[in-house]
Length: 268
Ligand SMILES: Nc1ncnc2c1ncn2[C@@H]1O[C@H](COP(=O)(O)OP(=O)(O)OP(=O)(O)O)[C@@H](O)[C@H]1O
Ligand SMILES: [Mg+2]
Image 1: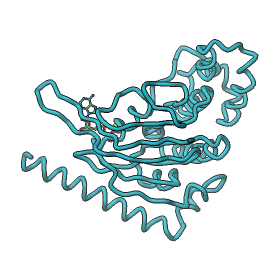
Image 2: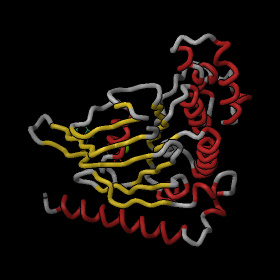
Image 3: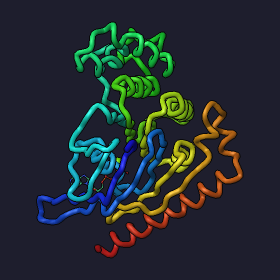
């Protein structure tokens, strides 16, 4: 069986003061191989927790996760993570960052050199491969992070706000790049974002999560990611369904935030 299966997942954090946080409750989700899922939801609804569990960094307190028929019990190169920023080796060149995984796996350079070049080409960094990471702009650094993740040949790519720290124009270019990588590599991708527009553009499937306890609130199947491959994303946003979806999801999240504020104000 291929794909990722998340079955009845729960995560409860016990706090030092004796309290507890139910970060996730009964989250179930099946992702087919090659699916592109975006995840939205108010702060604290468990998005990062969900991703960390799929990555194997955290063990859930309930439920089961399977990837390609095998239970997930810890981190593994089959699941690659791209963070918001800061996860690169600043003192290494672009090329050494991207080849880090294969080198650590003990592969000889002749095995991975051409693939590293190919990945640097795909992310548009062929001319920068000998530069040190600290010499690059934020957008370029995120492209290195994407290439480094792909060099490990993961089946699933997990991204937690990968474009959140970028300026608007760079972010737009990176959104196109994520779509291109998705199509060219056929990887399964889960992408967390705070931007409703980004979630609509980069999710052929989109889930909105709700907090306290963290759970899946609403799910959409969307045409925009497919339409956006190799296209101008500003044109995609003119699609007649785009704005109504955007407004609907914005109000949904707005209502959740209001509810949280209300509860906080009344001290419950
Ligand atoms: N290690 C931990 N110990 C205790 N509580 C935690 C821990 N990690 C997360 N939590 C709590 O679990 C809930 C979900 O946190 P999580 O970081 O997954 O939210 P998020 O949706 O990623 O939020 P944001 O959008 O702000 O990144 C929050 O209430 C958070 O305080
Ligand atoms: Mg988070």
